[in-house]
Amino acid sequence: MTGKISHIGVLTGGGDCPGLNAVIRAVTKCAIIEYGLEVVGFMDGFRGLVEDDYMPLDLKTVSGISHTGGTILGCSNRDNPFAYNTFRQGQMTQSDESERALYNLEHLALDGLIVIGGDGSLSIANRFDKLGVKVVGVPKTIDNDLSATDVTFGFNTAVNTASEALDKLHTTAESHHRVMILEVMGRYAGWIAMHAGISGSADVILIPEIPYNIESVLAKISERYRKGKKFSIIVVAEGAFAEGGEMVVQNYVPTSHDPIRLGGVAQKVAEEIGARLKNIEIRVTVLGHLQRGGAPVPYDRVLATRYGVAAVEAFMEGKYGTMVSLKGTEITTVKLEEAIKEIRRIDPKGDLVRAARAVGIGFGDNKQIT
Image (cartoon, rainbow, N blue to C red; front, side, top):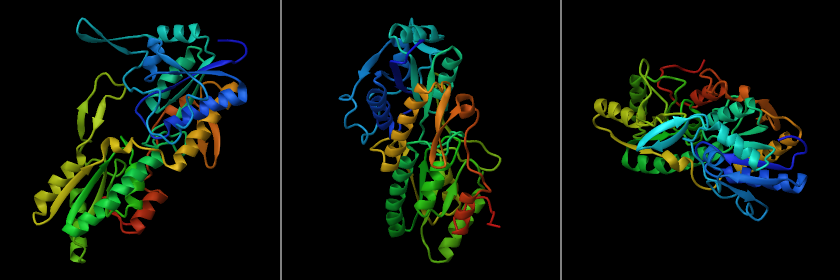
């Protein structure tokens, strides 16, 4: 993989996310139109790299895909080449298959790789960078929790989905005088819950960054009833937890790089409310993978396109071992180590929380804006 750049690979690692196809399209079209490169896409993330499963990408292949959800290459969050899962004699085993991946890059005469993914996929990309592979990363996650970029593509689409759900829940909540609880994704950060909750006029937002006290949540609901508002809307991030408590784990997937699957906290909150306010009906809605699906909103299509073009440009400029990043209104690059060293979380004392408190939104913590 030395000399003139002529042939690059691209893969979509981790979970699916609205805007992936727009990145694939941008990478392919920019590489071909601007630089005359050949492009191949590995199937199902790093699995395709290990198994030598790929497809050529040309202008016809990527035509008309930027507005579509999902990824034409497929994705996987279970196939880490450095701890690769295989079934042998009926049992799951793990082995280091990074040499196979390196061989496949070599025999395909690829000059390097563009990896589209979140912290897990970019951590793998960083390891390949240390092995001498020319790598450029593109930040992808609906959770918006990568610390080295202001926004990740897919986030705004997920927020839009959650906000539309809240709009619908408002009408039925008000009609039936119920407490409606919406659980959204986000892992260990509350960005989706926060943005959806503010845009959807929630009364309470529970996020991992601010542990909640159920008494405060009950007080907020009771206060609304005293004022004649006989319904309440609560948005709960899947990683939210009570003061002195722990996050609710739905299940554990040992074959994944991130084996913990959060979920169920909304039901827990509903049961706690129902045990105390017995005259109020409560309903729980879990959006789940609806937040990952569907067509990306225009903002994500544009951002994904900018990221894809910037990734190819960074590659051609020799900026290997980096991730493209949005800082303010400009696209720049940051080292992969910087991109993956910590997750980006909401500042409990920041402007976003202050603005929410100022319009009467509670966080289950008994605090008021100061």
